[in-house]
Image (cartoon, rainbow, N blue to C red; front, top):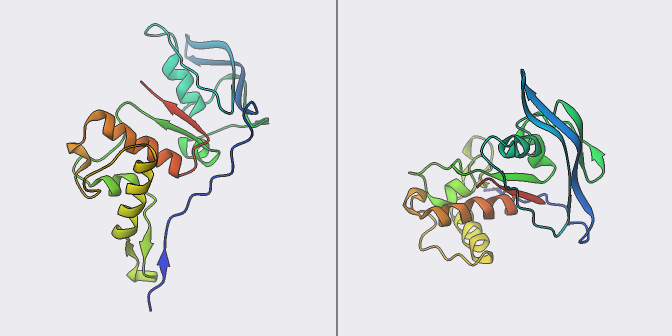
Length: 188
């Protein structure tokens, strides 16, 4: 007898447009004597799109790393849906629905599209020591999620390294949305 286990999203419904998703209040970040950010405040409401522009060294990457849980601000407050948070890792941010897609995309080029889509959160079938990756289910979900974004893939088992940069980015975005991103940060 086989027992199937599949990965499911645990996304909560988005709040209505205009509701506060996250806010930084007077956030500052220092690296020794270097001031990376000083008194930065921002609010992101549901349904909004923000673009962050600035010169090299202006603190854009530092701000993204604070929002995504890589760094903690040294001063100020970080609120998610009105509650103050203190993320210690990107996993903490992701658990609260904040996902970041970085320029390098953190994909394994020789692995298939669906294996990269589920990397670290694979659907399985079977039970106990007989549990194994459910490739058929992974391929089905990967096709569906990319189709929702208007991307048609030839073969979900095709190596992700053979995709264009834009196609790889689409895989990373679809993955973040599937796994419950309420705030999606795109780094370049």
